[in-house]
Length: 506
Ligand SMILES: Cc1cc2nc3c(=O)[nH]c(=O)nc-3n(C[C@H](O)[C@H](O)[C@H](O)COP(=O)(O)O)c2cc1C
Image (cartoon, rainbow, N blue to C red):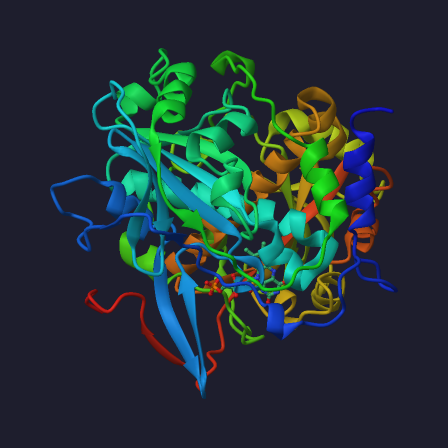
């Protein structure tokens, strides 16, 4: 059996079709709704500084502006929190851990505190720390069934980008450490410790990020020796027991299988192996902290407002690879391209467009698409081409699981992954990375939308193959992995909003 067979089986098996959704329970079992906050009982708690500009460690600032709470919403008797990072169904499968000179800590976003999991001694490089991200598949599977593994990976991509931006605010650099196998990440943060997870839902190791001064993080020499670090935690003192999130569970074995088959065994990357071709576009500043905290998903868009072409082009230029966060956090050349349904952009004719994020793909993508597309360049300094003109509002809503938000904005889009070639080159575990990249693209779009006075929404529900049919894609060479929409939101005035943390000024 080819080692990619399991990836294709899962990917095809979790497609939504017009006549049939990917397998899920089909109803919500409210009694077993997972708790969105994990805690480690008996782990000593260390509150993080509420002030991001506090002169102490930047860890609090990074976590607050990437994974912290951004608001509490209330409607009648219901009360729920939102976070800086978005999540499919607001279910938040992503957990975060910090590893620094003083030990291993779990981040508790409900309290903006660290729970100490392990104390160890090791020689630690100045001003650096690690952030490990994990997924609790059950949180997403509870609602979405088998497709949930995809959503957990999207959410990781959003979280990676959020951490990279927040590091930038602290004047730190952040990057993924691909040399760490998932198994070692699990050992480092203690999620492989059966004795601490009695009755508790297990966490799937996702990725490890190094944060610190640019000279160290992006420098040529390794900053931390994995074997020394693993040895230190093995000899360290562990504390805390993971909390159970639901009383009852449904086993989704397809998810266990795809997680196993795409396990990342780590890889050595030489930077020159994945040359990032720097484009000539102006790189905009980091979105400021206020924008990061105000990011929200639009629940509905107004179906009338438009955006000037310049603002649209500038938004798209931020999605191209550059030496700026979050792109500097990723180690691979872009594999995600955008098929855009343009509805209301002043000066840009409605229709189907394509933003090519990696010039090397153009010939293969063009060969895979319908023959009658025009491939007409749109802007001199942007790799954006018009494929076909026409009103595609109904079409875009239809393929996005009949969600009006895909038609009622300025534009919506499908993220088209260079699927076969990437998996053949980088192996089954790269299936996860394709979603991470699409999540990172989504995170930039969310923030660019806020900066433009508009609002975005990630769209994980779409009919996979009908999207491919629009483009004429007939095999797995390219696959749509994630959708997104941007426009002017219509607020739901029935909801009231409170700040994320009581101690924080509005
Ligand atoms: C991977 C992903 C998929 C999503 N899919 C949809 C979707 O299909 N339809 C929708 O209305 N919202 C979708 N959302 C938006 C979430 O519902 C939203 O992020 C969540 O409710 C939290 O709200 P917030 O983004 O305002 O913090 C998606 C978000 C993510 C990250």
